[in-house]
Every structure is written in C-alpha cells, then in structure tokens.
Image (cartoon, rainbow, N blue to C red):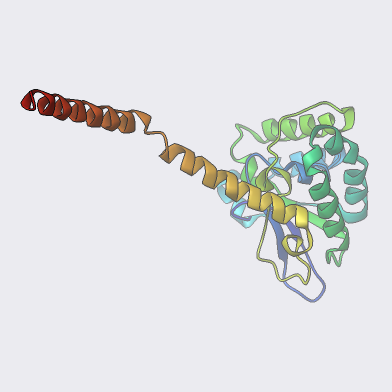
Length: 219
C-alpha cells in the first residue's frame, strides 16, 4: 500500500514507477479512466482487505490501458463543457498516458489511502460511481481546476518522458497555482488598514497641535 493515492506503471526491465500522486479529493482525470465494472471489482477487493493489515496487501486495481484511455478520450466533451480551461491539460495528460511505458498494457491505480477518509468502502465506491455517472450523463460536478484536482502531482519517476516537461498547459497551471498562493499571502499581509489609518490620523492631530501653538506664540 502506498502512502498516498497514485497511478503506477510497470515499465519493461525497470522497477515499478509511480507516475502521479493525489489524495482527497481524487484528481478527476484519474476517474475518467474508470468504468462501473472497474469500481464494482474494486469494491469487492476493498472488502477483502482488513484495514489493520492493509500494508500486507496489494491495494491497487489494474485496468486495461487501451480501454481506459479510450474511455477517458470519449469523456473529453465533459471537460470541454464544464472545465474548458483544463482542456489542453487533459489532452496533454491523455497523450502522456497513451505514450508512457506500460509494458504489460495495464494501468495500476491505488485509491486505498483516499478510501480511508470515508466511513466504509461502500461509501467510497458509491462516491466513485456518482462521479463517473456525472461524466457519462453530462452532469456538472464540483472539481478544482488545479494540478491536484485535475491530473495530480507528477511523481519523481524514472521515465524518459515527463508531463511537466512536455506539457506547457501543466507548467502554466502549476505557475498559476504558485502565483495565486503568493498573491493570497500578500493580500493577507496587507490587511492592516486600521493601524495605518490610525497612525496617519495621529500624525495630522500632532501637526495641528504644533501649528496651533505656533500660531498663538506668534500673536
């Protein structure tokens, strides 16, 4: 079991490679790879894992690469309709997943760490089913338009290709996330209007008193 939810590849002649990491809420690009049958199979898998001994079990679900990527591509209209600013990133992410080295043609997704924040495995898988129903029925759902909320953060894998290097959309959104955080920090630091106004008023009061004294002394 991994420390956080992740997408894993098994490249040829290499160690297992973690491509992307996420947590709660799950990156919704990941969910676009899944179908109802995948979630039902995952629910049965979760039910067989004792929570106290989870670290001794394989908590990943394997899905067919070609089928999963085709399913996600078919859901592109959903991204375009409700998350248009993320369309370019979605296209780049799909292309990256398509060309990444999955030697056994399987994509492995470990969602178990995120499932622990739900009361039961059933609650977790129900939320997954609701999410993919929104995709297929073109119903708007709430997701963050951030790296964490869309594709997840790229892990330090040993792959020859990296999304952060090949996708301008990824780099742009990442800079935007950092910049917005910086802006919010500066904004909070500037919330001291009363202190500044108080000092300014006190200055003018003192200036007025001095001017008044000078006026009477000169009479």
